[in-house]
Image: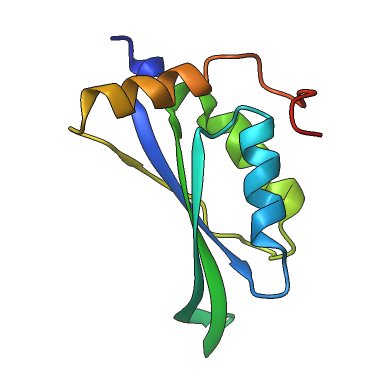
Length: 118
């Protein structure tokens, strides 16, 4: 397996007023993700511009491949309204083989809009 086929999980948080289902659908439709799991109402505490902030957000767990990461990051940045959105990627070191193969298959098509389910 090449490095580009490595399965990874990308994480981002979005404000609760954004439609997480629509973001998830767009990422899967563009084949930038095989699956996006949305965790609603996560409480985030962080320092921003010297001040401690606390907000309710939604977390997106995006299952994809290393090959898709840069395109996925660009798409997240265009969808996001945060000045510095969270976008972190973790490697998947092991998992159920058929599931990992499915992730690779679902993200192997050219990136961009498709006509399915529109």
